[in-house]
Length: 421
Image (cartoon, rainbow, N blue to C red):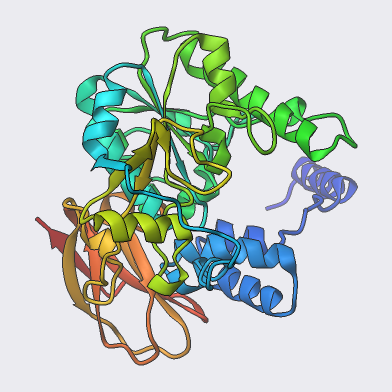
């Protein structure tokens, strides 16, 4: 029963609501919406359409994003072509090679910072980074810092610094960590006891507006070195740090673009890091498309596992990277295994599991979701299926997984679970 007082309160509340109005909302871009919903296919399809229409920015992003989905043909499209005729093979008559992991561990024992690079469109580099992190841990390496991790300037926000074993590994930790191979590398590092740090340039560290590209590079490299010192070394002077970067950031000497992160960190700390190049040394899908220095190394040494190669004390590599880092890693060409990349199947922690696939139409992404993370985390493994495919092989570490499909219509409910011993 309404009383005068109750009616007055209700009227006042209605009036207050009317006065406040509807709260303003900021619309999500399609890209942000796909990210928030944990969807990969719409982003992939949008980038493919824009790239096909001639958008150069979309073309570059597509190569990176395709690597997240296991679409190596698209990810490597820019390099899958005959090498330029002006590029000559290096003379490797007196070159030397050695097992990559043995050389890395020997060098890592003499320093407290190891810096490994990647090409941002090659998921296989992230698998190797996981193996390096695994090998470094017994030497006392206890920090994992990566270029991809977002360096948060505002709280509250998801931060890799808080990530520990058993927590969902979310896509918002960084751009490249949306790749399930990268996510598994970080999950394993957490299991091994690594702590995590971001060191990327923040907005207030940008070069002044209107600066040329060399000034912008210098500002970013300086900021990265300062941030890694502030976020790890200042409070942990005895820390042993594994740093995972892209491309030239691992160069110890000035080169094209100026003085990069590794060189600045060395100058600021007095620590001579072990720097490792792999970004331009990956075998092409078609051997005829190998870069000349890659073709020369594979022909000369015929590796069955990653090796490091040097001559006269200088690393063998692409023109811009040769001699700029301590070690230069070359990966063997591996044949696919059950329709999956040979490099992924070669990881001893991953086990092959064949599963039956429910019927689907159009594109579909088979995903193995860690049950311990529900659906909040990045998949442990996923890849694009061929139309009409009814069976597929997942490559996953031990654990429990829920199986689902992402189709063009959206993410489908999980249809089953598997346990890998």
